[in-house]
Length: 254
Image 1 (cartoon, rainbow, N blue to C red):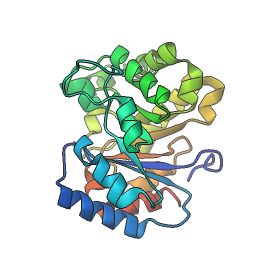
Image 2: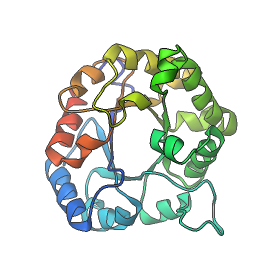
Image 3: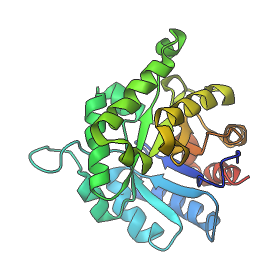
């Protein structure tokens, strides 16, 4: 995939969002792990809801080649924050990745760039890899402000944590107008932003994995992954069906 695939390992991340029962999770994980075994070029991560993390790692992923991630974490290390789950707790239960700054957290819970940067740092402190989500709204794109928004969001993490931590992270470009809408950015649109993010990160940018998120499906994954700066995907709805998700994973290895 792309001309830089020998330098950066592709990564496909399943974000299951607010979906699943224990039976559903077992069936979905069985469907994924039965098809994704052995040595692969692409790395695969699944991010169930908090309540299903222990089930995932203890019953399905412990001896698989599929990594466990969480959909979010608290901006606080510990204390009187009812309902929060800390980065340290997630590491303790077996998580290797944590999504921070997802557009739905920014939009529905008014998470600021500063809050996202704190979470990003705590994930690193807890010896996991953050998946930093950035992206613009339809209005911001139409106003020609896409790159300004991306620069601000990436810059908040850079300023708070430094480029060294960004170098050991995954960045996910997810335009809000494409998340859960069925509308996907064109390969050219996505490539432009991915290349811009890589440039923002300076010399370390060539090693950082930058993935696209926004209505990724089996029928559009291959064209997206063919772009030189797109290193994989953050997958929502299509990750809820094992066969569809595996097809996207396979596309990352072409």
